[in-house]
Image (tube, each protein chain N blue to C red):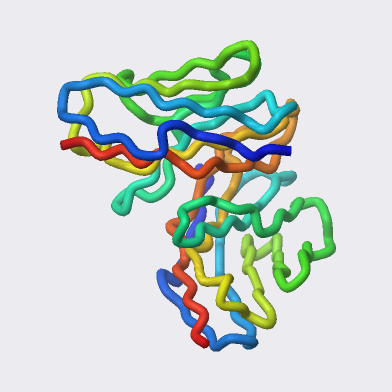
Length: 115
Length: 113
């Protein structure tokens, strides 16, 4: 099976712009989670989508949003970019079975730099 | 609140030797799962091993094994016969709810030839 793919791999934006990141999960996986990784804060959970619905949400401002399509592909959007949004954004997919946590399989990440 | 603590920011080991990475956690749950992930310089997060708390037996995957002590809330990772390819950041991860994982701060492991 193909692994989790993320596009683009690298992005450079300026403050105030918005950005959309894309994630395609492993075939058959219905859950997609997003994480932000920075040197200062480490890995932080953004949100999880399952069957086109947000199932869990981390402690991030409303500028961070996402969605999931019927084919389980997910997009993450960040509006009004700030310098502090510079990070590696990781997407992870899993089966999404209810009742217990799945093993999450990660994509290669999107490196976002905000100037 | 659930927390995960990795108290060793950096470690090194000679090739072919054994090294143990520590992780402690806090939870009020009785049934849960714990994970170790590695992140090599390529930045791709890779699952190393997973442990179900209700299982008495420690999980093992080839050269990787865990020492899970539920009462002490300790979940250490042992790497045997260390190889150069084991050089990476290692994260202990705990699912807070569903697939919302909480990651420790990581241990940077360097395998020395």
